[in-house]
Amino acid sequence: MEALLSVVIALGVILVSMVLHELAHGFVAYKLGDDTAKVDGRLTLNPLKHLDPILSIAMPLLLLLTGGPVFGGAKPVPVDSRKLKHGPWGMALVAIAGPLTNILLAFLGFLIGHFTEAFTLAGISTLWGQIMSSFVMINLGFGIFNLIPIPPLDGSRVLYAIAPDPVRGVFEKIEPFGMMIVLILVVAGGGLLSGVMGWGIDRLLDGFYWVVGA
Image (cartoon, rainbow, N blue to C red):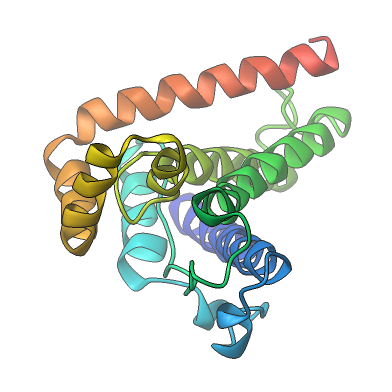
């Protein structure tokens, strides 16, 4: 029963987190002059428009059940870089909007959980404590995972804006195989990836606690 409750909570958090992640991409693109996401119906709160069955549901739940950091991605928002203002920098802004949204959500969830004492020894065992803990950890996982600089993850778009032409050429060549590379990384390098993800999550949590003086 407890495992089922954890899955239900995680699914709810994943839906909210991924929808807002993708909305952030589409909204920033729209503000920078590209209406592709809007025309494609991606500026919506409907999760079915954004979620990828493997990256958004199956992989995070598998990681949850195996005890690893929960991370994943969603179906990329369509962006026409030719319509964006500021060239590659515009694309970088679109890309970074998603992970930053997840990290901001995690911080807001942390503040709410902290000041409602959801993370105390007594609070963590309550339903509210479980919801807030999942909300913070899943959003941190999604945010950090999507900053990995492998196409089509958001980190690659940010790095592309500042990379020299040879590196940009490499990104363009591996783009068609990027999702396969990401899945291989998750499966074959899961231990290393989980370690790196865990380190990043811990550092952000340290920063959150520093903000509240704890």
